[in-house]
Length: 471
Image 1 (tube, one colour):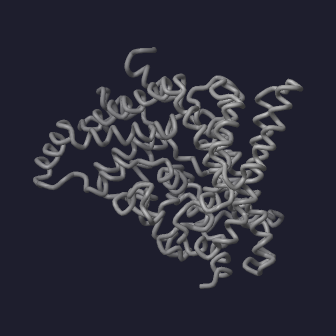
Image 2: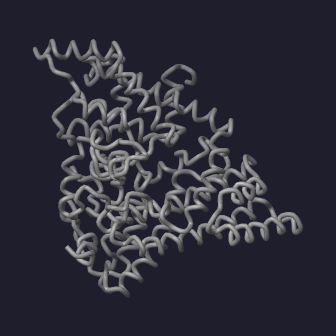
Image 3: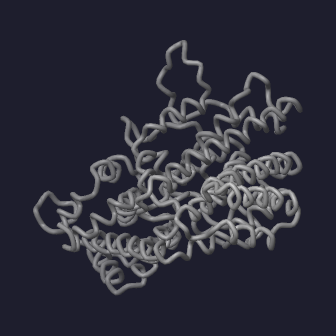
């Protein structure tokens, strides 16, 4: 298959079921249609109260997961416009498909963090730690023994692969589940998005045992994982139809680059607004870390520092101007790196992120050094720990209740009440949509779906209410 044929395949309007007919005047391409389905959805709205870096931050200025996603969406679309112009000029994309790549990247950027739990990556770690502890606990072993006695068997109630899904929980993997299954619109296909939009959120096309080999593993597709056992069939259909061969879609590389560009600079901008870092610390780190872009970037930063010192321009304005300058450099470098690495990107064999092989890798590295200071701020750490306790605690309460025979009953027992706390939409999927045949797995997954879908505020409040801390 030629690369041109691959792009044609990626641009097809293929979905798990035929979409509802549109009016004749609807001139949207398939990915603009996907964007329209998602932009007003509940999971997107919840991102406004999910942590980007600063948990439970009261300042309206500071980015949430929603504002970050909108920025990634815009940057990705911008990169897509430039690249598709190049690909049309080189006859890799047909001119009648102009706008398709930028639209696909726009929706990909919007959804890229959709599955992240409350409190971001710290929330992910809380979910992982809970299940690591739970699967070796006395309570789990006694429950497994009881189930085996009831069923007159002597088998593990969860396979190693099923356990691995939980102990390696990842928001990226949850994104595919949210988009393909968790939101019911009359059938089992969720938002019924195009295969290519769904493929764009599968960063690591492996299951939880084949994947999760770590950041230094040579094959990028196996460093983490991309789908739960319940979404294996969904993954297989997408992977086979789009001829991805268990490799990344080229769109994933570009979306990841947009994510790198957005968060690396923005986190420092927010850090300056909260007085965690200052412009002089930024200069010190950039002087130390830069190589290729040293003179160009430092000259611009020095010019901005003069404005700050002489003209008394607000420091937040200065760093905003610097962010825009460096992001522009990174975007240009990503486009050139895409051209140079086109073959390996199209085959999914580029074993690094595009920004790492670009001329702007030193800019991203300098920002990452500064991020360490931001992430270690005591106010952030305290709120992250509070979030950890809430997520771990909610899992403990709900998983304990799930071991009771009363959990799904219609009675007024404690366990039945806990079951009723789970949102009706997640209970509906568990009771009616999910076809996976291990109820012990799907029961835990329903609980994880519910908790990972909460906003930061809702998770904290619910935990405090259930523990009697706040009524």
